[in-house]
Length: 175
Image (cartoon, rainbow, N blue to C red; front, side, top):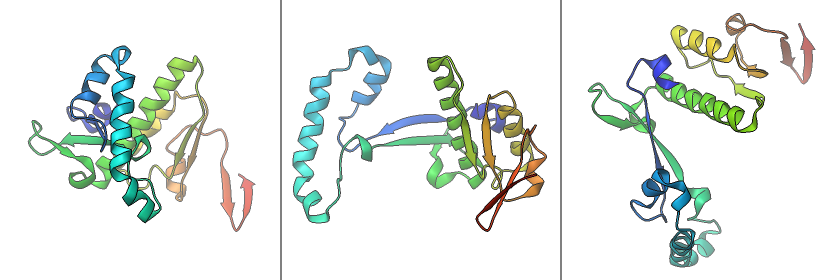
């Protein structure tokens, strides 16, 4: 999905964790049915024991699946080199990557559920150039029910719209 709009070689995703041992996540992605759940539990328990005192001092959890992250890497000027999107991508590239992941998630859910969930996109056009706005409008045109918010009337004409609602001062009015 990212490749279709950005024209690059695509993006790469990685799993970043403070408690999963190096190589375990990659092996799990290669063979999800062969995941050693006992080893996974042991890694988590070891890390939780290690940070327990710090967690109690700070009053927050410092380790666990909820603290893990997805690393998104995009091609740099030398397309052979992939760079962390958080620190090396423009806002437009970051937004495009996020939208590509969201649309990919929608496709995955649609396939697994046998039905299309509602797609919610909040202020998606604001940081996209005209070409990316057109791509996004075309991408959501075939999606079942999509709700898109925008702060600009100029964005309204980009998609095939069944209904427009204006929200102002706590009131919702249908155009």
